[in-house]
Amino acid sequence: MLRAQLTLLYSGFFLGLLAAVLLATNLLYGHTAARAPENATPGVDQVGGTRQFDFGPAALGLAAAIVALAGAWWLAGRFLRPLRAITTTAQEISATDLSRRLDLDGPNDELTDLGKTLNDLFARLEVSFEAQRHFVANASHELRTPLAGQRTLLQVALADPEASTESLRATCEEALQLGDQQEHLIEALLTLATGEHGVEQWEPVDLDQITETVIAGRRQQAERRGITIDAALGRAPATGDPTLIERLVANLVDNALRHNTPGGQVEITTDLVRGEAWIAISNTGPAVPPAELKRLFQPFQQIGSQRVRHTDGHGLGLAIVRAIAQAHGATLTARPALEGGLHVEVTFH
Image 1 (cartoon, one colour):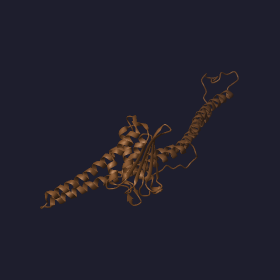
Image 2 (tube, one colour; image 1 turned 60 degrees about the vertical axis):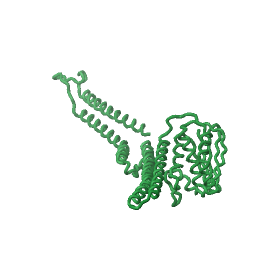
Image 3 (cartoon, one colour; image 1 turned 90 degrees about the vertical axis):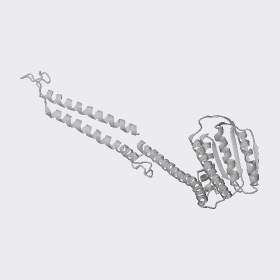
Image 4 (cartoon, one colour; image 1 turned 180 degrees about the vertical axis):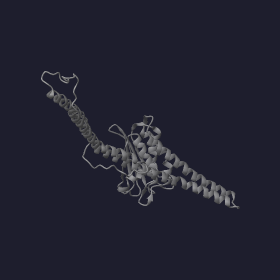
């Protein structure tokens, strides 16, 4: 519609200008011919042989040309004014003021569609920047906590003039534990960043074998907590980054073990469904409100007033699962288990 309007505008401009020129020419020569004798040569004075020029028709043609130009200029301004407004407002919107939106008053045309598209883009950018600020704030808090704990431990140990070897050793062990928390958090952040960056090298992987290896490394941890792992690992070949896929499975299993109850259960299944590798993990545990389900896969989120992390967790496990699944183009679905806990499925296409 906008293209048709602009075409009509430019066509009208040139046609109007041409009509003005033709009108001036017709008036000039027609008026001159009407005043000349019948046997006279057009445009030649019979007395002196010089051309006669009548300013009346020329002035009328010039006025018509000016009117045509002014009309075309007015129409161009009318059609392009909304575009200039959109451009100006879009330039004024920045990362610090993404709450502004374009004014979409006017007819429903291509400019209105452009404004709606830009408003949707600004809305997505606002959500993304807000999530980024929230993530950075939480990551800073999580990194600051063990650092502050380490400093306090060392300051207390140094301030005690009667500190024994045993007390200093215990302080060093606690400081090492806090350092391990920082290392795990940094590793999780790097994994999350790698998953969001995408898969650079694709290769065949066996999802069932990766899952079996992950389970084997966590059997003792499950036994210490009194949790039973039931695995039914069918053949499930896929394509992707083996390291990232292993991290996906490991985070799902760790989450199922961590958010469980003593004497609970974890069920893990891999299979080939309609030619696509599929893994499902469910666990017993606290009930998960359906309204909070989506937020579990965001970094450092909370259920109600409780932060979704334990002392041995970092609050990024399911966020890493989501990022790796998206990087592989896999389908991730989750739902609360009937008797408490969470059921998660990932399908690699």
